[in-house]
Image: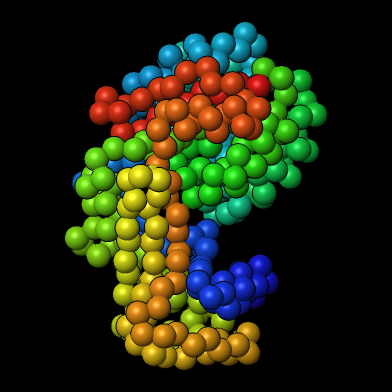
Length: 313
């Protein structure tokens, strides 16, 4: 049993405003459903960032301007889909670097390594499994090789503003002077565009959220009746926040036998599952300033939906 998961479920479902953390979406089934989300025509984020890294790899590397061998350290590498074009550019241009993907999943790292070695046999890859900050503090600060950290995919949007600043400060603490951070951020845009990406007509995002209840049932011998729950999502264009919820469709009690805990749900009660914040360029600049990093350049896709921002220490 995952003790941290169990503690977070108990804590979250005991609150007046019930919550379940989005970091637990990604079991095997959740990861497969998220692949479906990324393939939806409405879900612009993946294609937008892929365009930036495909068409502007040369400009990004020139802006980093390392004049010696360097590391690319990708935090939360996953399947490495977006990063591939950046790595391909570097390998094809005989640029001397090491790719260090970091992820908590042994399976993800194994699959990524196998796939990249097949596609880019000349790539120097050194995967690491574990917590970002433990790995960065052990390796990055203590070596002389300059590094560019990658934190892509709009992951920063899952944090409240203070949490996002704290996270970037932790990255800063793990960086050497002259190191860089490429930060992926979803930009504010037509609210309809954003709403359609997160509250899709196919019900895929609903399945993605409800799958978390199925995971709880499986791991903690729970009796969530998934037909008694629905999904709702709302985008607020004033503060840039997408908030996602699971909705109880009636008064009900759920038992988690392995935890010896039960939770009461009221009719129409909400379980908050995810925050996905959208930023303006000025807000990204402010994040950097508050965390002690300097914005070197914003790289945007052609529709200005997404930004990969190069920050330097």
